[in-house]
Image 1 (cartoon, rainbow, N blue to C red):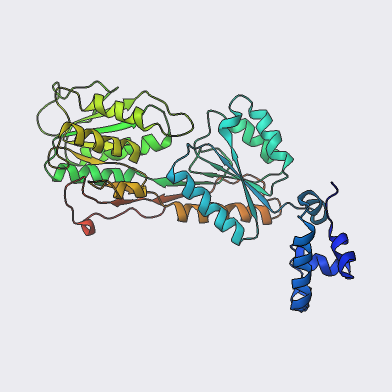
Image 2 (image 1 turned 180 degrees about the horizontal axis):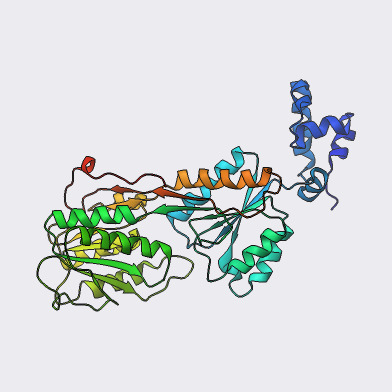
Length: 377
C-alpha cells in the first residue's frame, strides 16, 4: 500500500503542500504561528483520517540531519538503568532531539556489525552508557569518531579523547565504613562483584580509606569463603568477591546464594557493605530467614539508591547515584560537540559527581548532618 504523503493531504484539502508541511512536517519555521487555528485543525484531522505518518528518511535527507541521539546501553536491566534512559530521553526531547536506545548485549559477538548499525541511523551523536571495554574497545570508538560521530561516555569506560561523566562512590563508601566503626562494629566485610571495574575500585578505595583513618589494618581479600580468625584484635575486615555472573537482568537468586555463603561462615561479620542494592536486599532476606537481627547483630548497606530498598520490612541504607545531574551533564557535553564545528574532535573533559548516603533502618542510627558529601570534581 502506497504511503500517504503531505502532497496527498494538501490535494484533499485544496491547500498548498507548504501549508500542510508547516503543520505536520515538524518544522520550526516562524510562519507556523501565523496559520489559522481552524486550518491547523483541518490538516491534523485529515492527516489522521488518511493514516499519514512522517517519512523519517525523507525528512533526514531534506534537512540533512537526523536529530537523532543514540544511547548505546551496556548495562543490565534494572531500576537504575530505567531511570538513566528516562532522564536522558526527557532531556533529549526537550532539546529537540529523538533518542534511540541500542542494547549492546545483542551484539556481543560482532562489534563491527554494531558500528555499522549505528552509522546506518546517521545519528547526531552517541552516548555510551555503562562499562563497555569487553565489547567496545578504544579501537571501535575511534572508528565512530573517525566517521564524524561525537561520543560521550556515561558511567562507562574511560577512553582517551572521549568526554566522560561518572559518579563517585568512594567518599560515600568511606562514610558508611567510618560510621560502622564509630558505632562499634569490629568485623567488617565489603562484598563486591568479581569484575575489575572502576565502580568496584571506588568502593574498595573508600573502604580502605576509612580503615586507614581508624588506624586499622588493611583488609584481606577472599572469594565467598573467608575467615577473620587470622587477623589481629581490634577492627578486622575482609573484601569478598562473588564469582557469579548475571545475564541480561540481575539474578536475585544468585545474590541470595552468595549471601547464604557469606553468612554461613563460622564467624560472620557485624557490618556488611554490599556492592549494590540487589545484594543488600538479598542480605535482608537471608537475615530474616536465619533470624539474624538487623541492624543489632548485622548492619547492612547497598548501593544504587533504588526505591524498593525503602519498601522492605527493614529499609536498606544505600548510596544514591546522581542520575539526573549526570544525565544533564552528559547531554550538554554531547550537544556542545554536535553543534560546535569540528565537534567530533578529541576531548578529555571529565566530570565526577558525588553520591549521597541514604541512611535507613538497616544500619545504626546516624546524625546525617555530621557526614558531609564530597563536592563535584
